[in-house]
Amino acid sequence: MSFWDYIKDLSNIARRVAEWTGGEWWVYGLLGLLALLLFLVPSLLALIWIERKVFGRLQVRYGPNRAGPFGLLQPVADAIKVMTKEDVAPARGDRLLFRLAPALAFMPAMAIFAAIPFTRNMAVNLDIGVLYIIAVGSLGVIAVFMAGWASNNKYSLLGAMRAVAQTVSYELPLVLSVLAIVLATGSLSLVKIVEYQTVPLLLLQPLTFFIFVVAALAELNRTPFDIMEADSEIVAGYHTEYSGMSFSLFYLAEYTHALAVSALIATMFLGGWKPDVGIPWLWLIVKIYLVFLVFSWIRGTLPRLRVDQLMGFAWKFLFPLALINILIVAIEVQALEGFPGWLALVNIPVAAIILIGMARLFRFGRVTAPARAPERG
Amino acid sequence: MPDIGLGGAVGFWALATLSVGAALGVVLLSNVFRAALALVLCFVGIAGLYVTLNADFLAAVQILIYAGAIAVLLIFAVMLTRDTQRGSLWNRYRVAALLIAGLFLGTVLAIVLGTDWGTARLLSDAPTTGGIANALFDKDAGFVLPFEVASVLLLAAVLGAIALLREG
Image (cartoon, rainbow over all chains, first blue to last red; front, side, top):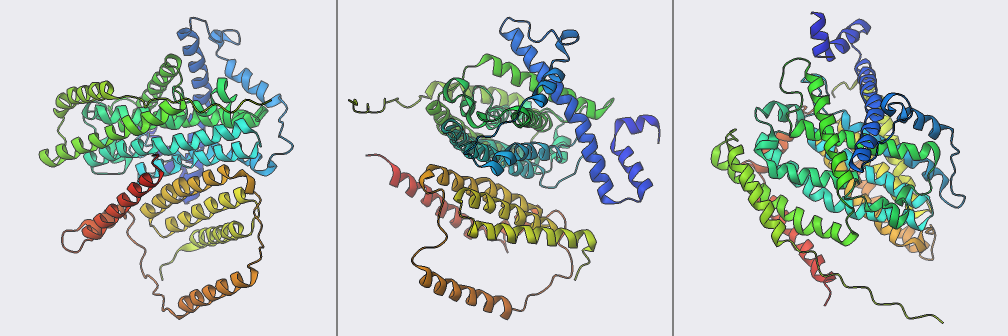
């Protein structure tokens, strides 16, 4: 096996090491974890820098530019600052759960990466890949709950409650949009979904892509869906009381989750490690970064939704749209015995017509002001 | 009985202890919120047991529905009732509760001990998703009608909930 083969498919290195140590399963596990951390830690630092730079440019400022060339060392400086800060816990809160929540917040985001195929072999080829990712991703909200409740703070609790309402609402369109992909590809395995994409699913199912990205943004609690930590309404929501390293764990968990969802979008819609030339896993990483760049762009452009708008959008717009989408995909799969590439030419106009039509028909409900409380005095 | 090896045995006992411990926590913790979190832990432990049985699909569904949805709704309900966050383990129905619980325990024990539990000689095939789908939707031997009836039942429940909560 040549040097190039090892670079193209890093799992060859893992196999070699595992053979050398006797082929135990935990060697694979440890190597996988190591590889993941080697990807994750530099990526997180880079993403934080990228996002701050993008925000700066979008808001006609420079963004970080003091620490190192182009402000590249800013995340490192931030990390040092955060680690040296005092970590305070509210005296009347639930100490145990307060400490446990930041650690738990990190776990689901990390666990998602286990099923992301960086190449055909560089992944746990789970037969239920997509289902596993949705299931694990849905656990993140429990850490938010714990944080909000253990803080013993009204704003934190409000933020946590908003979080659950939002997550439960947007999980439906998310799962339904994934269902459309599973219908077309006929598999839950992410490796098979990537191998299916001779034409990226972004072109084949643009409507699915729209629903998934919007719902995923809501699940990530990024603007325009960040009402659960809306700084101007409820201070910072569930992590109001957190400081120092505990806070930064939440911060990092948020970025890890964003990275994981970017990876999922790159895998399911942009063809994952394809085109299979050069170094395949590098293609995926480039795609992940591109998706994240778009996320930052959206975050820097759109204002925050109101609570009632958020719920109305999920239930009255996204949810019916997801149902229509499934119907269309199911009919196409049944009628055409598969999902040929030329269908993109049909599906893109269809998606545009449906989206514009539904957007024109869509109305938020009439907002009635709550009855005034009787004057005191 | 299939040989599960040392790793399998360690995994089984760790997960079993975790599940039972968490289940005890659900009943014995007086802090309602912590009890609900213990329930999540119990669900996750059971999902882990499914994984050791090669029932990967079932495990993912267990996490998605029980830990991700039902437990989350439960916690939501607990948060809305902040006044009673410290539930009491004892109340004045002690004798009646003991009686009923004892009867229930006796019944369950009688069934568990009286049944001849068959032991699988082989592990199930690794990808179970296709098998489950075939078992459910096979044209001849499938359960299409019960499956559809279940979905109609759920729809009726949703409609009922909406009808109950509609204003005016």
